[in-house]
Image 1 (cartoon, helix red, strand yellow):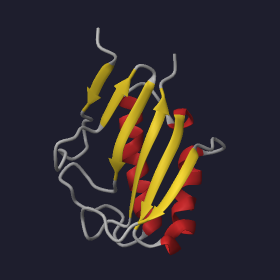
Image 2 (tube, one colour; image 1 turned 180 degrees about the vertical axis):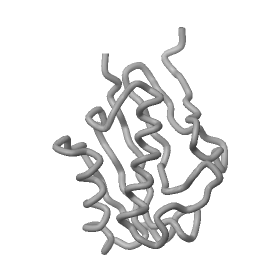
Image 3 (cartoon, one colour; image 1 turned 90 degrees about the vertical axis):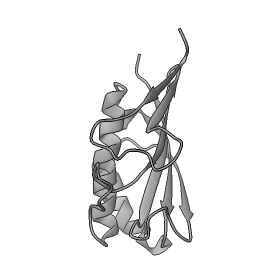
Image 4 (spheres, one colour; image 1 turned 60 degrees about the horizontal axis):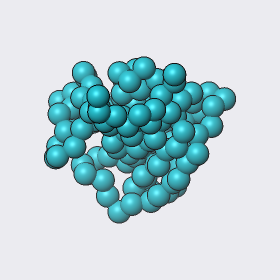
Amino acid sequence: MSKRQEYRVQGLGEPISHYTDAVRWGDLLFLSGVVATDEDWNLLGGDDATQQTRALFVNMGKMLEAAGAGPRDVLKVTVYLTDVEDRASVDIARREFFGSHRPASTLVEVSSLAHPGWKVEVDAVVGIPS
């Protein structure tokens, strides 16, 4: 049996290029960049960074659940912001999603994301519980 397993998650948009929602290797799960969209790629949360982040964490929750994990199992996130001034707004939704659990984190300001309305994208590395 291969250690590698690909996940396509119900309720998320079909990937826009050659990737999958997540890949598991042994006890590690690697999440592709998660954004605030519905399954038809409609933007959720409008122009508000906190609302977009809340919506993307709903999507991340679906990805984690598909692999038998939850927010407490997230080991590392990378947060991509189109405006670093949105950091405090994003942090509101992060605290709601992770609670007292604190994953390792990197924050990067980028000039743009794949869709002009997206303000934030998050990818993650997750430890799958035994």
